[in-house]
Length: 301
Image (tube, rainbow, N blue to C red; front, side, top):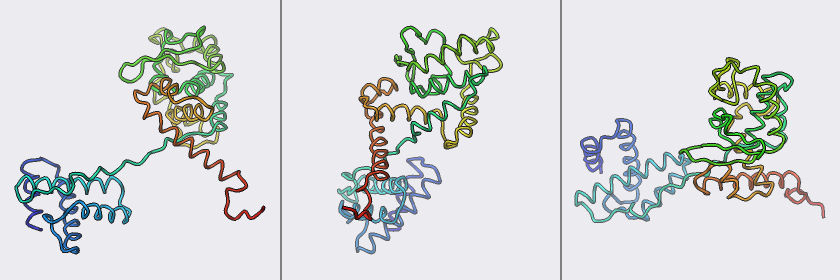
């Protein structure tokens, strides 16, 4: 099998143009696969789908990461396709093997209590604090992306209609309703604080920096970190955490997925469905922590 591996590696070098690191990884992966086959009295040409499935199962049992297993499977696919292409066999045992499933990565969210603590952290008696309070509240109340927040212009806000008109990814426009508290803070900021920042070169931006220009994403991110410390909430909280929290809290409050999808500007409902997993997980945690029958050591009748 060593000769088969080296012939395959030579093909990769000459025809495919993979990086040296990838080729080295493929060589290790195929040597490992070859040892597995040797222990079963098989070789690359005799391996069938059941053999490959068993091998992948062993890899998962050895706690390899999903990405590592996927790479090893990719090496196997390339090898067996090569053997078929060279006319050494008619059988590709990887042809019907599905890709390694991606894990569902649940977004980080804050509790409602944590969100409220964060919104209360700025000192709204100062122009800077009022601006930041309006930005944080608007972010949590609408689920805006931070780029959409700092990119807001005067014409995007409809105070009478209590809504925002936002152009998101791919130039897709959407209208988002704004909660009264967030709208009141925004109105107060526009009347009392924004004039203190405006130096005539803001390009109609709503949220201005101390220099009178539109607030930069990094500047807002840095100020968010300060408020996280003041509110005593996780330091890895980001603007996107508030977007995730907005969606999760809406779902837990009974909003339907389609409405949440439209407010977030997701092109696919499948992207929005991740919040159903978050909500289910949070409900499970609440149940485990509070229900009298949730613990196996509870022996009361």
